[in-house]
Length: 335
Image (cartoon, rainbow, N blue to C red; front, side):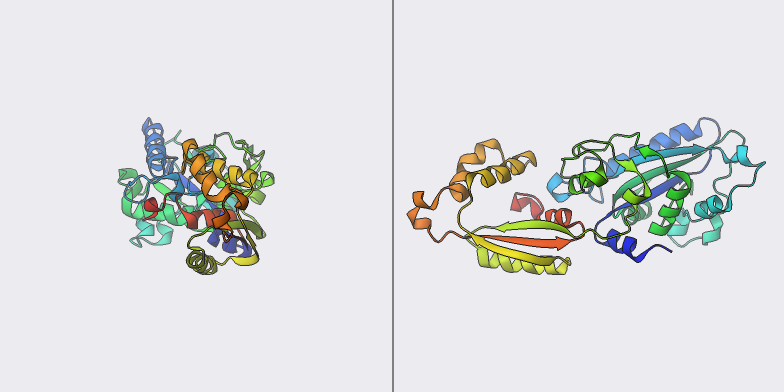
């Protein structure tokens, strides 16, 4: 039984594991099918950030949304036919479901033995992916969007629950160490889930050495992460109400609040540089940004009433979720 903590972590935005299985095909069928499968998944879940239906999304609307391939297993179960396949491996493979089962057209038992080859020398391929809400996103993709004949024909199966994914991972992928695959986007990219993880979880900060382990992929405790929201005039009251309402709806806890005047130049420059790096502003915007928030009150006597409100919130995956709620830095793109 999947632990309540793990289920809660996934509900609150923890990246999920999904394991795909491709039925063993003989001859040249498997390499070609594998290429088609990877191309289709890359087009839908890769670094370009596409919404359902294929619409391209900006990074600000796809925060933490990229999906990474973290491991591959190729196993010829036909060679193991003379031996007894361990019961735990059979149990893990029986948890996989195909398109017809997802659509409730066939019973769960219909795919028993899907991993056994139809002819000698045909391997089964297992692909391990990681991404936020990965199981539900892939289920929607398989049931509504993916037009690959093999996907609707039952040659591609997947783990339909967190429990099934954990069982398959523990059976076929545990103990692999660092992933052999590069992350789909750099770790400082808005689309990367590692941007919002501690270095102890994501490896060396800014690197691509995410370690494949149950502790990293299936957390057993919630991390009460802190994040900060800064609210600026002139519509401070209205924005405050909307912010508190949205955060309450998304299960944030307000930890602290502080009122200040204009920003000191170091913090203003830090915030501005991040906005430029994320593509929400350009370097040419600095004079206007500096003028609006970073000047000393003494230089603007008429601005003595300038107030900036800082709010500190706590939640599992707090930084990523607040960034998702904020969306793109250009409000017009959030419509």
